[in-house]
Image (cartoon, rainbow, N blue to C red):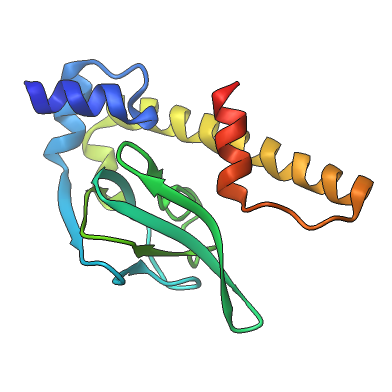
Length: 163
C-alpha cells in the first residue's frame, strides 16, 4: 500500500488515479532497469512503451550534427516515452540513464486490459504534452524576439512548472 501511495503522490501521470486504477495499471506493467550511460532507447528507434522513473535520472536528447543535445533531465516521479505510446512511430528523442535508474514500464499493447486506468493516463499525457507545447511556443517567441541563444529546455520547463 505504501508503494502505491508513493507512486500516486510522485508521478504527475497518475493524477486523478485511485488505488484500484493504479493496481490495474501496475498489473499490466513491468520494471525496467538501466545502468549509468545505458540507453533506454535511441532517437528514431521503434517503441511504444512509456516509463515512469521510480529512482535514478534520465537525460532526454536529440542529435544535431552528430552531437547529442540534451532536451531535459528527468528524475523520480517524471515520465518519458509518452510520444511513442501515443504516436506509434519512431522515437522523437533518445533517453539515457545518468545513474542506475529503475522505472515502471507501461506497454501500449497491454493498456486495453486496464481501460479505466488507460483513460486517465491518456488524459494526463495530453495535459503534459500540452504543457510541453506551450513551453516550445514560448521558446519560439523568445527566439524570434531576441535571436539569442536559449537555456536548456529542462531549465525553462522547471520555471514553468514552478508557477
